[in-house]
Length: 226
Image (cartoon, rainbow, N blue to C red; front, side, top):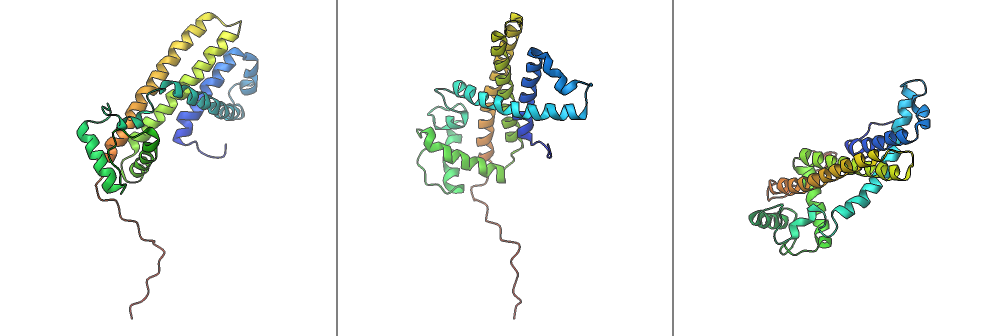
């Protein structure tokens, strides 16, 4: 496709899309000739990846709808710190979080507890940007990638399970087998969502209270000292 796939594209788009396309080939075997007419070839593999990439966006769209249902009434885990008793941080950590937001991000906020998710959203995004720039984002990226991966796989398998219900020639055991696997991936998505939020705020709490000084432009020409 003319470029390397990013980590997010591989985990959140390509792998779920390939799963969806492979499942569709099971229901519609006549389309297998489009990819593997003469065995596995470079052209067939490239076409499979291209269609998988497009199908992955469909799975991601379905996954976005699905995660609304998963977090319905509770909000995303990254918003749970505004609760009085959040499972993500201890009361002492929440106090430290409030202080660090005031000192490091220079935001004049009151207490985090009791904020609405709408009020907390831009603050959490600033925390994320700060950790990505000055923290150790490897684990956060890993949790985020696994979250999108499991969300996409759950959505792809759910779509295939629904298709199997509408496809009269499909054995009912296929549907029974797909649904619990989709639920397992949905549960894994839930767990990685919690791990992502917990790691995000834990990493932010490790940053120093003093915000980093802005870097001086390197292209400024020094004037000679007379």
